[in-house]
Image (cartoon, rainbow, N blue to C red):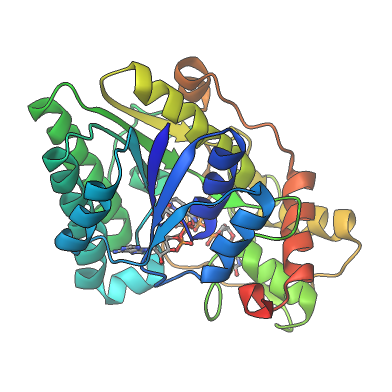
Length: 338
Ligand code: NAD
Ligand code: WQD
C-alpha cells in the first residue's frame, strides 16, 4: 500500500514508518518538524534500507498538502501529527485546538478532494471520562480533563461525522494507552524537548544523571503499592497495531474506535523496580504529592483490537524498560548526537 504518514518523524510515527517499510509498504512523510528532528528520518532509512519522500510542511497549510496529494496516489493516511503535552494545553488551549483540530479538518478536506477515503487516527485513552471502570472498553463514557484530551475527542467526532456523510470512507480511531520503549536497535526512540512530562523519559534521564531524582507523584492511591497504575505499551507493538489497522481499513468501511493497550496495569514503582533490575542502573526517587488531574489506575480492555485487527501486544515490561534504556544510553542527547 502507499501511505501518507503525517507526523511521521515523531516518536510513534517514526516507529510505525519503520515497520511499514519493513512490511513492504511505500510511505510518504509530512511533518513540520515542530517536535521532531530530520535525523529520525535518516535513521528510519538506515534501519529499513529503504528510501521515501519527506515533505517538511505544516499540514494545516492546505495548498502545500494539496501538492503532496497531487504528487502521490495514497491508499490510506495515518494521521499522527499533533501536539501532545497535556499540561501545556491547559495554558494554551487555542494553540492545541488550532493545531490538532485544524489539521484534521484540513486533512479530511484534502483527502475528500483527492478521493482518498481511508484514515487511521491517533487518538488516546485520555478520551475516556476520568473515573470510568477499569479495564476500559471502547463503549465506555467519553469526557476529558484537558484541552488536549478534548482535541482528540473532537477529532474523533469529526471523523465519525465524515463517515456518516460519506459511508464509503473507512476510519479507525486508535486509542493508545501509555506508549514507551524504542526500537531494539537503539537508533530511534522518544526525544522530548525540555523537561519531559511523561514518566519514562524522566526515568531514563534520571538514570543518566540529568536529574537528581525522579519524583513519584503520590503513593496513597488505591493500587497494589499506592503509586499510579497505567497500561504501558511498547511503541513497537503500537507500530504493529497500525500495520494491522492498515489491513483492516483496506477491507472495511465505516468508523471503529479501537484501544491499543496490553490490558495489564503497572504502577510507577513497578516501572522503577523493573527498569533498575533489567538495566542494572539506579533510578533515585522521592515520593512527592499527587499530580493534579491524575487518577489511580487506567488500563485497557484490549479484546476489540484482537477481534477486529488480529493484533495483540507481545512485548513485556522487561522489553519496554530495556529498549527505553538502550535508546537513551546510546543517545544521551537524543537525535542531537547525529
Ligand atoms: P510526537 O510529538 O513525537 O509526534 C508528533 C509529530 O507531529 C511531530 O513530529 C510534530 O513535528 C508533528 N506535527 C505536529 N503538528 C503538526 C502539523 N500541524 N503539521 C505537520 N506536522 C505536525 O508525538 P507522538 O508521541 O509520536 O504522538 C503521535 C500522535 O499520537 C499524536 O497525535 C499524539 O497526540 C498521539 N498520542 C500520543 C501518546 C503518547 O503518549 N505519546 C498517547 C496517545 C496519543
Ligand atoms: C504515568 C504515571 C504519573 C511523571 C499521559 C497523557 C495521556 C497520554 C499518555 C497522550 C502517572 C506518574 C509521571 C513523573 C510520576 N498521552 N509520574 N512522575 O498521565 O498516564 O498519560 O500520557 O495522549 O493522554 O495524559 O502518563 O507518563 O505522565 O504518567 O510519578 O515524573 O507516572 O503520576 O501515574 P499519563 P505519564
